[in-house]
Image (cartoon, rainbow, N blue to C red; front, side, top):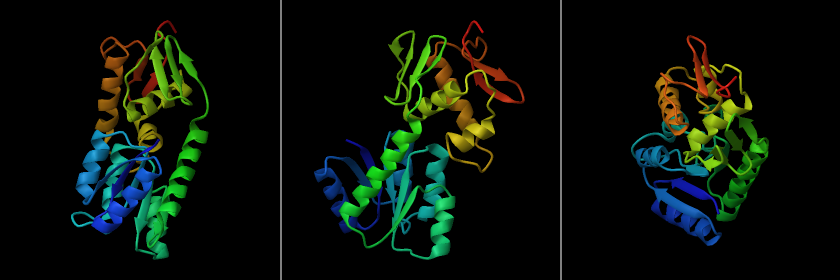
Length: 227
């Protein structure tokens, strides 16, 4: 069962899609405004977001950029806008798929399943082991000394990215682009906050770093404590 968030202002469409996906065995949450959706993405842990562009409070394209600043969750844009220039712009801004209304619930479900298959195939590697840290991207499980780490989706993605490149210094710009899919510059605080929380969960601090070593002016690397 996948966790799906629908951001759609048309109540009939929203309820229809939510009902169809729920009947298909999916866990569905839906809201009618862009900012509500962005807030839920910030707080939640979704597998896919279905995003309309014609929202009452903020344009869906702007909502997409906000979501990309928070999460790498796959986003399917579902809208009546069929202009090719608009489609290209939205995909380049970080959407994973684009479907033009009207469309059936079955078509949307098929697109969701396709995106999830691609995500699984992309992450099917590892497990990565660094000291007592193990990251299994197939099962999306990370452990420290054999004990599971309680990580959010984004914390897991960050740890997995560093574990796959263990011993290699990774810049914050690269982390923003590859983990957050946000190649727009700025927002380094996003990385800093997540690294701080990840340090705590690994039982360390910036002043007493063991696994997460900062190379000042360059970036961060994940290493075994005795390396």
